[in-house]
Image 1 (cartoon, rainbow, N blue to C red):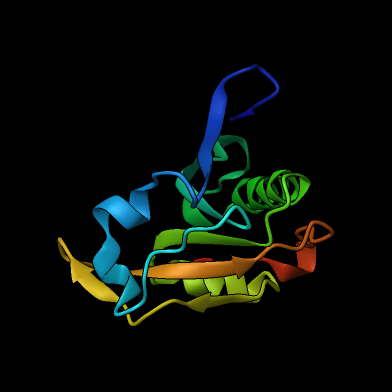
Image 2: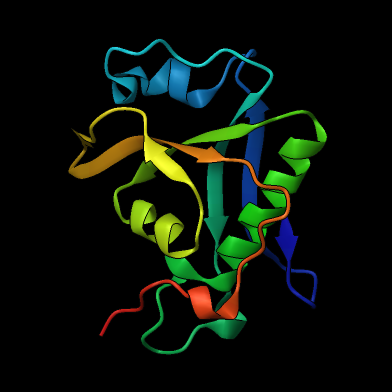
Length: 144
């Protein structure tokens, strides 16, 4: 959980090792194509990820690309690395792929995207780098 200076919750995420039940394997296995669902203490699922940095949002900024989200991802990688994790896997909409790439992270698709309820989703592997931190010059795209 992430909290703002007033103590309000502004972000959440869940980390689960894939050698236990997790969302991608049970709800979205089609996002893995022909691959079996990961089952390893070294691969952790990042799910239920949400970040709304209301204090930093301007009228044209995208809440999905906030610096809070990248800060939370950094903390998640540190936590997973502390438990021996080497990769994250997550169900994400396609726009997240560009955000991760622009942030300088090593991320790749497990399989081609799948249209689910009108949105293209994909399973995304992210190599855990416990030293990675978001940099101000690696900002994500904002609408023009």
